[in-house]
Length: 467
Ligand code: ARG
View 1: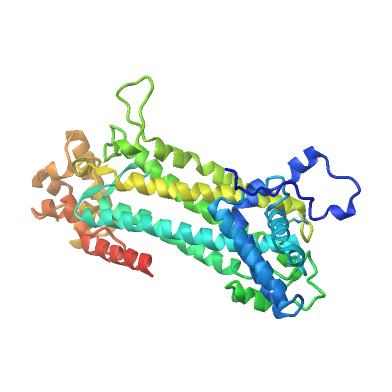
View 2: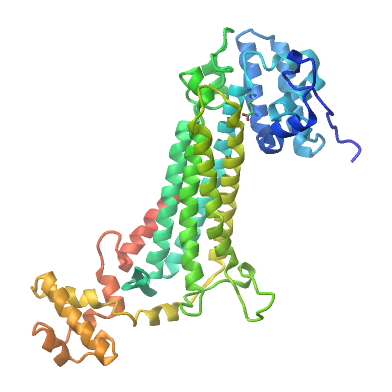
């Protein structure tokens, strides 16, 4: 494309002190533009606010500020349209935008960095980027919660075995299980939104480390950027990467949740379980075994979890020995933060597609509730209702289980005489009491699997998504 403007090689912002230019290999090693280019629009937004504040404080003229703002807006427009290409020979996105601005507006461009350092600039750019990025992630998570709730609403009557230690434990419903997943995601949303509150505080005006002798108005600049407050210590402002670490730990917890859901999907799609059939669109085959339909997407989500944890450890380790204030080590923060973010965002989207297109094998789940004495606790609860102490009732129910194992039958197949041989308190209503659907609907404690309680959860989850 002939009309793409490439800005060619600009000298580094700091080149004035040096007689010799840096070695090409040195430049290649230290530049970060391939990573930080994704903050181009955040950098422009920050510089527009900075120019306006400089004019407001009469540090530059209104005319100069107007030129800077127009120049920055034209850069943004041309980056969006593709008319302006990023110059990857620039050291970082700040250098590229400042140099392009000066090319476009001349001397006024050289004033944009007045009273500012890349140290406070990068801290601002990252916070502005996170504001956008976290809002996108939270809305994807809320969409996933709605998808889970929609499936749950259709299955409040469909029972499935609940497990502990991967052994049949007590019956629940598919709706109850899917709501359990959804609650995990509500905590992820809250954690992200909470971390955002600490992040949306403006560091700009902290300079390289010691603020500025020029009469900058930090609060005015922050208000132009939509921040309610400014950071309170200039050294802290340029040394702090807590927000990168905090978000990457939120991402790690979120990815751990997705990984657990995926583990269940992998298990449930085996022929042994067969609780779920993934759609063909979200499955893959084998190059040798013609019959295969594999849950690769669930496995890849589970598999990418280690990468997100790795990013968190990289950030914690990168920061642990750094003296205050800025050290170049900190440039490495973006790679970890962005990789973790990209991973959780794409995994959330893919998980949503996979789950909304899956088919639930309800008859298999219901049949599976027959096995494993899921109603043994209810046999004990029956006796408790008749006044027997729970510990004694537990023993009586266990003896019924032993008898059923010997007879190779279910608890409900024992005759009333056999029940009575374990305890005289059993009457013929025991059969209705331990019917799996009855057992589920008897569990009306808050948060329990009874249909009326699950409907309350569904309502609360819907309210969460809308709030
Ligand atoms: N690219 C740098 C980073 O991401 C920007 C700050 C550079 N500051 C400096 N003093 N070299 O951390």
